[in-house]
Length: 118
View 1 (tube, rainbow, N blue to C red):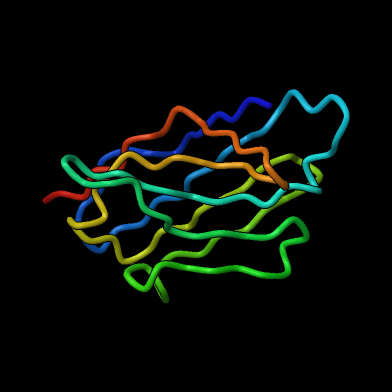
View 2 (cartoon, rainbow, N blue to C red; view 1 turned 90 degrees about the vertical axis):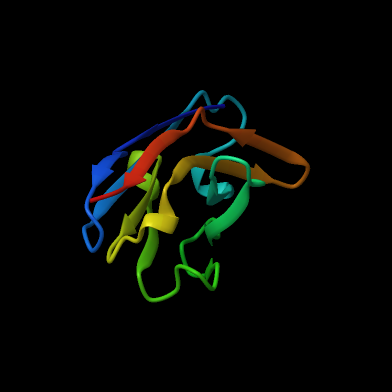
């Protein structure tokens, strides 16, 4: 399975960005059977979970630091997961990674840089 993130960039504090992650390469399974997550890693820090959505889109979880500002969603018809980021803060600056998982399988994208700066 391959994951390709897009939508990162430079934004001022208080601004918004929408990240997308498109999955491909499913041979014996379907995208709709996988949980999807967004992680981020800032310089000098460990990679941390930002948001997670289950395979049906019916259950989501968020890091406390982004609750009320970020929204994760998915479109299973397009094999895509999104992360809508509002009210961005400088501390949101990081490389954002898409992750796919099911049972013991985990796959990662290459990441997209988000920089929040005035």
